[in-house]
Structure formats: C-alpha cells, structure tokens
Length: 193
Image (cartoon, rainbow, N blue to C red):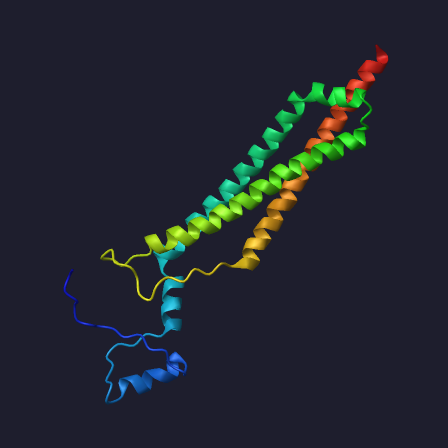
C-alpha cells in the first residue's frame, strides 16, 4: 500500500465545551497551534456558500419533483377514471350505488398513493444511506474522517409525508367527485331516452 503520511491532526473527545478547552490546548505542554471544535466546524459547514447552495438546489429539486408527481398522479387518476366509465356504468347497472362506487374508487386510489409514498420514502432512505457515504470525500478523494453520520430529520420527513398525503387526498376527492358527477350525468341522459 501507500506509505502513511505524517499525522497532522488529532480528534479529542473532551468532557468540556470547545471554547473552554481552547486555552488548555494552547498552553504548554500541548502547544496546539490550530484548534477547531465540532461546533465551529458545524457553523463553518452550515454557512459555507457551496454547501448552502447545494442544499438549496436539492430543495428546489425536491419541491419540483413533488409538484410533478402530484400533477402526474392527478392526470393519471383522472384519465383512468374516464377510460373506465363503461366499467363504472356496468357496476352501477349491477346495483352499485354512487356512494359505493365513490368509496371503491377512493380505496383503489388510496392504495396506489400509499404504496407510492411508502416506496418513495423507503427508496429515498436506502439511497441516502448508501450514496451519501460514497460521495462524502476529501479533496484528494479519500474517505472523510471522522466517518459521515447520517441523521434523518424525522419531524421534517413526517411533515412532508403528511403534506403529500393531504395533497393526494384532495386529488383523490376530486377524481371521485368527477366520476360520481360523470355517472350522474350519464344517468340523467339515460333517463331522458
């Protein structure tokens, strides 16, 4: 392998705060020339323009993906409901009430939406657990030290899932209303003839 270079940094787990530790580390016999606490490093990383810009771009991408997924779900559900109008008419002719038809269609769409949300969440968590350590490298391409710790902000994740659930619920209600209205209009036309 490669020869080990000279050690030029040490990581210490101290029982005191970083600001309180600095004078002790700079004093003899340690004579530390450079000192940085974890809090200082976190502050530096959270105000670093490239890091903040990357986070902003990823956030915009997430919002755009959520908007397009919602539009896609709404269009898909609406078109599927219109294409199945004959199937719904047959079910109505067999004695299914409008309310039962609406519940059946809503249940069907809820299964699709919940499956999509859960699969998306699972894939996102798995990909972040796999990819983030792979792309977190030093400027020389070596693994960072200490190793990356992935922290999932469960409160934010659950808030996003709740928000998407509400939006998808509104879309499902709109599709069910559309189908029931379409069925009611067909019933009126059938009554006239």
